[in-house]
Amino acid sequence: MIPTKFEYYKVDSLEEAIQSFNELSSQGKNPMYYSGGTEVITMARANNIRMGAVIDIKGIPECCTMEMKDNKLNIGSAVTLSQISESKLFPLLGQTAARIADHTVQCKLTIGGNLCGTIIYKETSLPLMLCDSNAVIYGKNGRREVQLNQIFNKKLNLLPCELLVSLKIDERYFSLPYVHVKKTKSDKIAYPLLTVAALKKDDKIRIAFSGLYSYPFRNKEIENYVNDEGMNHKNKISQIIEHVSSSILNDTEGSSEYRKFVLKNTLENTFKKLNEV
Image (cartoon, rainbow, N blue to C red; front, top):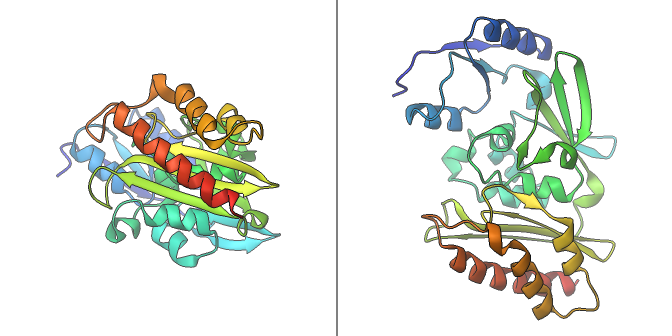
């Protein structure tokens, strides 16, 4: 049960969403956009978030589309993880989505909710960062399109009242060799000790992580180590572990030392698989 009362609004257009958000904000109701609602409901029940109103965006066509257009895959922010994985359009993102929560939750949890929510892992961001994806955003000044890597720094940094409409990914990335590995404490369905997504483009490996820090990330310095032809795998891994050591999480999912151990083994397997193609 959610301990506080809130108002529910369902909108049919981007313009209506922004108008509703601004009106509710002016009334001091601390509105939130709502798509799948899994995290909003969970966090509200735990009294970790408080809102006076939610704005349901599932009635906005642009937020619910998933289609190929002009050689790009357009995924609306209200598209569920199960729709993404079952479509098989973007294999790396599909495999990532299929390992987040159980199937029942995947049928409700949306990619926008995963990217914009408060849970730290945001694993769908990893393939999107690797593929130079674009985010389509709508706000009081209208529509803008920007590369995700420019606005994703620990979280998706949107301006007040802005709404993530969709994500665009170039189809040339879909056929590239990739690796996705998720390691958990004990169960397949759990928060990650470590999730690694990597792909190989133009003989260079791109790699991104979740569960290692308190936020997901892709780091160019780490990729420089990965692609340094003057170092063997052992030295590359040592350099990477030294680079990340000071910020590795130490929590109930696993100690920082155990995460280092998992990272070492995961990197070894990732390098092996991608260097074979």
